Image 1 (cartoon, one colour):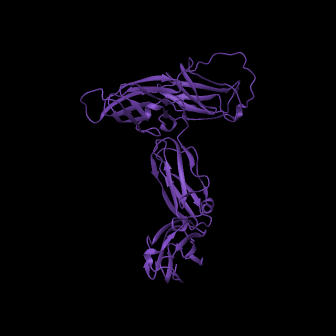
Image 2 (image 1 turned 90 degrees about the vertical axis):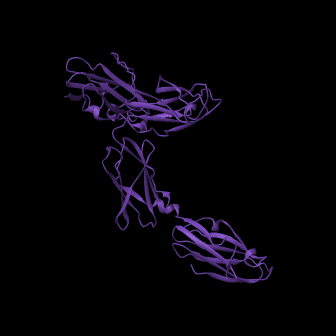
Image 3 (image 1 turned 45 degrees about the horizontal axis):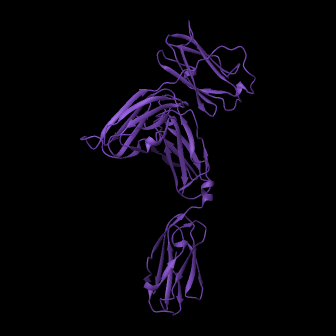
Length: 425
């Protein structure tokens, strides 16, 4: 904007160095909202005061002389961005001038945007995902980021397809729940972050369904056993790898735990230890690698600055035995509301575990019963694992080729699609 100039009266003779300015309008602001600050000229003497605001848009400037050696200034910016507020006294900059002030978009602008064509499930690894965002008249910068299950941040491609409409594209590289941040002028739009699932729920090798917790991920003492828990109950079987890198090798052990596994390790030298946890392949689980700070005396001699210890095991689910029954207690449930999904409902391979998930969250209260019968004998291994929130993960292993029948019941009633017929080639 053009300089705003006016004359102030004599109270002192210190000139520009004695002029002071301050207030929120010199620190930050919001589009369309007056940004206010004060200028004190009592010790500067008589002279001309000029104010200029320059930035992405013209700014309206208003001024109030308080007649006490100070004045109030406000300006209104019309677009977001960095604005330069210059204050001069007798054509000389006052201390700290010019001021750089970030002006944010109004939160109401971000709420005007709408998303369409966003598929929330059924997506596949290495197949492009795209959706549309309409601005609905809002002016500003659209940006998007994708957070993958392993914690990696994936870039997106944002392109304009109409004057008021943009397409956002990304390529998922792993299975699991992805979170998409869509921001307008730095503000989340309505509904952001959006959640989309790549692959089937509980698909093998999904690090996004594995979590870890416990004090051993954060701290420890030399010579004292530390521990933490890795919760794999929500995921299908997969390879679990734990690697600990630090000032000493550690004695490490892994034990069965109701929800997964308990890892025990004993550090022998003080310092920072990096604990990497991977599941189902090369991808870290969320939060990995963790840093544990170990204190205490050094209990081993020699050794390099970094010593590595690792352990790997094939995660398995504990079998749930399904016994015969004559009559179940009366439950309030509706089997037609049960939703099942996963490759294990239609295909299976000899010697490999097949997997599917069952969502009973809308079906009331009852017992999930699963059975698999083969060409000659029942399937020898079937596992039903509760994943919380009335969700179940089911795995089964077939040893022979042929035609199989998969029965899934919610209480005494078949769920939609049951019995499922599976051909094992």
